[in-house]
Image 1 (cartoon, rainbow, N blue to C red):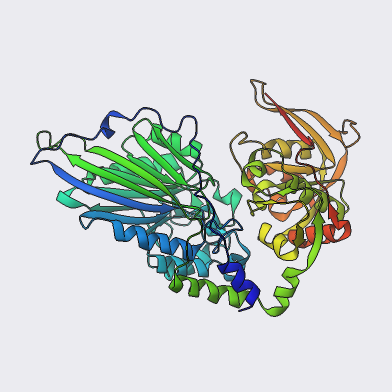
Image 2 (cartoon, rainbow, N blue to C red; image 1 turned 120 degrees about the vertical axis):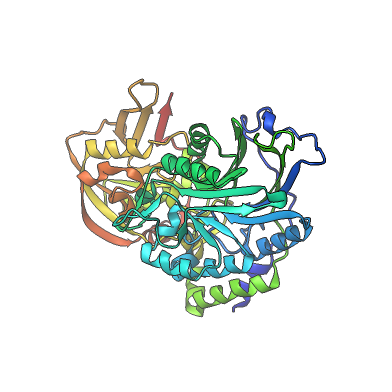
Amino acid sequence: MSHRLWHKLRSFRRLPKTRMTMFPDALPPTPQNCVPPKKHDNDRVASLCILSVNDVYDVYPDEQGRGGIAELATLLQREKAKIAHDTKLLVTLNGDFMSGSELAERCQGAHMIELMNHLGIEYVVLGNHEFDFGSPVLSERMATSKFKWFGSNVRASATGALFPGVIDTEIVTLNDGLKLGIFGVCTQETPQLSYPGDQVIFEDVFEHSKRCVHALEAQGADFILALTHVSIAQDRLLARRVRGIDCILGGHDHEPFTLYEGKTFIHKSGQNAFWLAKLEFQLTKSHAHPDGPVSVSPQWTMIANQGIAPQAECQQIVLKYMAAMESEEEERENARVLATLALPLSTKTTPLRSAESNMGNLVADALRSELTADFGLINGGFIRGDRIYDARTNITMGIVNKEMPFPRPAVVVRIQTRDFRDAILQHFSKYPQLSGSKPHVSGVRVTIDRSNPAGPQITSFQDESGKELDLDAWVLVATTKFVAGGGDGCTAWLRGEVIRVGDKVSQVVADFMMKKRLLSYPEFEGRITVTD
């Protein structure tokens, strides 16, 4: 193991405690069934504690000392030691952990299975990124895991049965004979977001949730927990449509959320184990009303995983995989300086998935320039670093690989301009929600009007000089193979034809940076304007 890599893993300074931002509608008045009940001697009472994370891609902390698997191990060990002996403890990871980093691409998720086994994770729900290496690889990884996998709507296409290795529901017995019921569902959009293959299908989240709730109620569940990997909008809809879910612990979104939807408590912990959620529930079954609902008293804490000392045993597992990945030659290549920043460069998740991003603009420019196309487009979800690089930062090959860990090739699509326009509109289908499909473009200026009752429309589609584009003309657009194949549900791309396949996107961007040497991208250029 090189001194530089060891230093990278160990020398993160302790920073001030992370501040949590609550959303405007996050905590409406507490529902009636969450008011602490008056305890009577013959009431049945149980305590439940859940430690939870979601969307964990990186094994080591970021440059601000946030996250890290060995650091999470320390937090889990510390919090587990605080749990009272009569409290039932569960540890969950709510999808997306096998992919999304350079190390994951090398190991095809094997490293995360070993690490999660060490952490003592008990339950996971399948996320879309679990299918990034195909269903056969996922099945191999599941076979080596020591935890249980949920995904009630994930089915074998040939038989309609549950995907092999997945459990449908689980009953956990708590104190005083009270019962916890658990199930989980994965986003139906997985075929558009990943590579599950034809042997697996993703059925209706709501119908399977209803079925699971009914099954758990029939088994006497007093409290029902759903582990989900869907958007926050779908979580809220799930709480409204499916009665009987007491708590939803979710993933898929990369920002933390805590809110009530009616009487359903919904929580997401953010990404990369930046926080460990500690959720505590006291369940009380009234002796006077034994057939009535359980009263639930919840409380929750978001524990910042920042500046935490790594657990030694877990760190050894991390170092084993890192050492296998990075040879001396690769270390030198990753240290190679490509360009220097004249202005700050942002790879923050929120602007990449909802607004304009200068890193998105840079990558779109690189695709267009290096593949000699008329236009360039990159989806925001392709860029993963979630950080800001200060002016005068030297951008290295290692930084580029970390920002774009998916080794997907760049391609050139020959497509009619009107179909390119339609594809951009499809990329905006989830706006203003955060979405990995959010496009960043080069060579085109787009105005989207969302005020039309019939749906959003592109009202202006111009080249860089301000001239409206000929919608009947055929153009060349540089993008990724994933996008060109109709990824993220943007099927208008399929009206075009891939005429050229280039190098992987990270290498295309590196070549572009090497030619530029000095990168000067303002925070906003107005390449895409959205009006309401």
